[in-house]
Length: 420
Ligand code: UD1
Image (cartoon, rainbow, N blue to C red; front, side, top):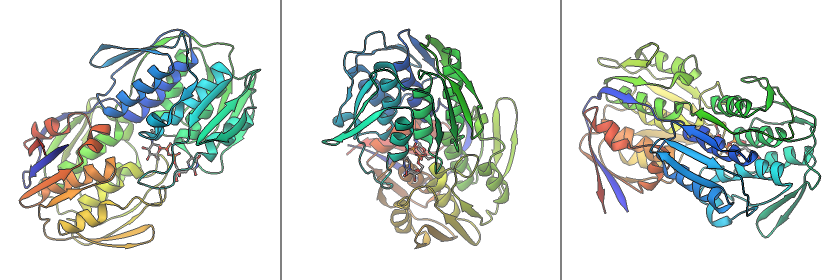
């Protein structure tokens, strides 16, 4: 298994090109099931989660072709299998996104329940309730959801009690092939959902309300193929930005327009970091910045993203004073705390709240993390720490960060990947 070794203390300096958004691409790939014609996706990130989704779609009978290293062609002319197997779904929760499209296209789908994961219970009740509203009959059997609608789905009103990205995506995709109109209320508004809507509209779907919490879909008998460019990854963008901040560096990020005018960038300003946006992206200058402590609460978009909470916590360990972080989305997303503490961070946990008292410096240490964002938070801490940090279980990073060590090394970081 690979590890990453960092010799900390170098301020980052340079340019980082942000890759295509993992979470957007995963939903877009699932949407290929909705049509018999090929869907071409460009700006596809090279990540193991994308490979997992390709394997899953391949297992359903889709032809998945890499046209080049950044483009995928997904052809669902023949769906030969309507079962998403536990062995794949358990690896990646986003696999559950095939349920809505498969059911809508085939009138039947059997998809393994994703089960718990490191950051919390992460139920799928909202996905199931939305599909039930659209007329699906649902059964749970041996760890699988069996959904059927032999005469097709029927448009309905879906009111989500809480915002869920995945359930909103599953409901939208299913409704594009339902008979009649669907109205989704309290829909999640993440940019990745906007990207999915843009692509579905190019495929011939009739959808109103992009970017709002009420979405109206007029179902179609069939959808066409299309070509679509995946938006850039706002979480990768925020991660590199924080890596520059914690090292008191100066970098330019290209892409990632989705993050402008969000709570995240407001917080970066509150921390005392200077930044400037232009048509290409954003330039950050954290040289000579005395990082100010802040209060952060994770919320659905456009609130502060839970997927940047761990990275922000790592950064705040070096702020001048006490910061407060409230995790409102997932119940168990502080697993980076004991590891950061081993590097000298001072963090007190009380339920869903973490109090982070800034320290003078962090010290490198061997660390291990249990999920994607926690792992990258340790990379960020390692970039600023005195001495060597060794991050084990790198496979978590490869799920969501394309060539992370190359991108950081290009900005001067002393970082390398080794085989343990
Ligand atoms: C997506 C993102 C993930 C991000 C999360 C929140 C993808 C592939 N993943 O995950 O990176 O951290 O949004 O921004 O896009 N919930 C239920 N019942 C459900 C569904 C969700 O109770 O049926 C709860 C979850 O446990 C969580 C909250 O709703 O507390 C939000 O989760 P959700 O938005 O669904 O996250 P995902 O779509 O799984």
